Structures are given as C-alpha cells and as structure tokens.
Length: 260
Image (cartoon, rainbow, N blue to C red):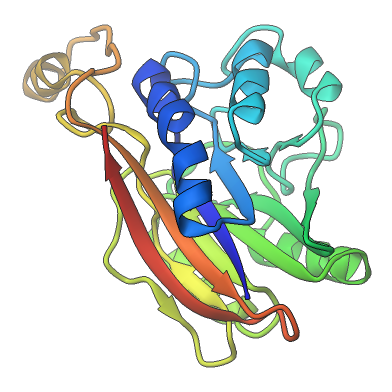
C-alpha cells in the first residue's frame, strides 16, 4: 500500500509557510510516499514564481500543479520551462509553454499527474476536459503505474461528471479551484478516489483567502478594491489517498485538515 497526499490551492505566504512547516512532519507521521500540491495562488494569491516553486519543491512537495491563474505572474511563462516537477493545465493550447503532465516515483512505483481546467463558468481558452483527459490517459498508461487527475473547475457537476467518466481508469480525480473543502470524499465503484474540492491551504478567516472587509464592501457597492491575502486561521487542506500497488486502485480517501 502506498500513500499520496494532494494539497489544495496554496494561497499566498500563509499557505506557503504552513506547507513548509507541516509537510515534512506529515510525510513522517503518515508515511506519505508522494506529495502533490496545487500552487497556482502561491504568489500573493495569484499565480506562482520560480523562487516560490523551488522553495515548495525543496520543502517536501514532489510535484506542483497549476490552474487558471497559471500566467498571472510576469515572467513565469519563461521560468516554467526551467523548473522540473511543475506542470500547467493539460487542456490549454499546445502553444502554451511548460509541461502538461508530471511523473514522480517512490519505492519503484510511478505516479503520473495532470490537470484539466473546467469550462463551465471559467474564462480561459481550454480544450474539453473530458476529451483531454481521455487523450492524456491513453498517452500516459504505458509510462506509469497510477494516474492522478486534477480538475480545476468551478462547477461541482462538471467535477462529478469527470469523476464518473474516469472511474476505473485512473487512481484519483480531485477537484480544486473553489477553495472550500467538500464532504464528498469517496472511492467510486471501480476503484477511483474522488473529491469535488480538496479545499485551500491558507487563511480561513477570509473570503476564499482574501481579507474579508474589502470583499464584502465590493459586494455591497460594486467598487473595485485591492484584495490582500488574509492572515488568520491558517490551515493546510489536503486529500490523503491509500493506493493498492498491485492494482493502482484507491482503497481509501480522506480529507486532512491541519491547523497552524
């Protein structure tokens, strides 16, 4: 049996700090073999930089995935090609720089991971996530022992539909983007772990990681404001999955919440 920890959207400095502080301990205490983290909000709540990506990888994260904020930080389109173990969403146009998947290994077991962006209520130009996932699975099947699919999407229906679509073909389908952990962690009938949203890793005394006051005021009067990353009630939110090595089926999935 192997264990994989998938960490939800890391938001700003508070999220980065709790990852650096708690991931090494989680690896030891839970005997975790693989750690994957979504880092698309790691730089001040929007995007990621080369320095931040390297610090996360040096601090115990094995692979970093990204989402719709992938290109928010200036210069990242060049840096992404120089950093291993970071991948951008697979269903972006092929002309976009960066890797569309990653393969990590532990104890002789190879895990591939890729992200697809949802298209419902999402603004980025992206291929159909269902067709992209089908293509990626076919491409990766001979190169790895297990496949983890992240769906970075707004609509729960789109996430659930992809989970059922891929049941039995991948080890896990995990949702990110909405920053709120869901209570629906389950192993589907054919052995695929599923969760609508893993939640965010960052400050929960907030509105999706941002200071409460300016967000509420924006809803009240519609005027633009600066939304700084909040700082209080910092938590790490992740899905912990147990994988049977002989079949690559998920045997268990649970939400892990760690407070600072």
